Image (cartoon, rainbow, N blue to C red):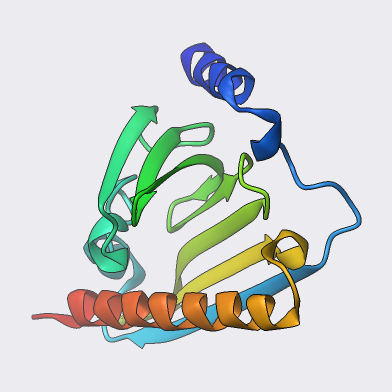
Length: 168
């Protein structure tokens, strides 16, 4: 754990002031995606890559994902490549069937939670929630465009996760 915290501290120190946390007040916005699975939560969680800290890369078509420290537990750090941009993500919460990550060095202080919730013994529900500060995105049109872009991208990822979880 000390190694994970030290890595996170070094990453924080290496960031420039342009990448510092967004000043307040903030205008937080959220998107939540849900999908039902015809599999128990344990099976669905494994199939959507929940136990693999970089498993989400195949559903979001990320250009890369590198685990910098940890294995996905609280305090783990990964770097994802979105297009040509490298983004540091830190695991800030974890349960048996969920994790929450933050991108603290982005101007929008982005957070995401992926979870699989049991419905009954044979069914579960995927819940993927996003939250970010849209203040730094720009004017109302830029904010709408950013929200719609994330909606398309993450809906497509959730659709892929459902197909993977429900596969025979």
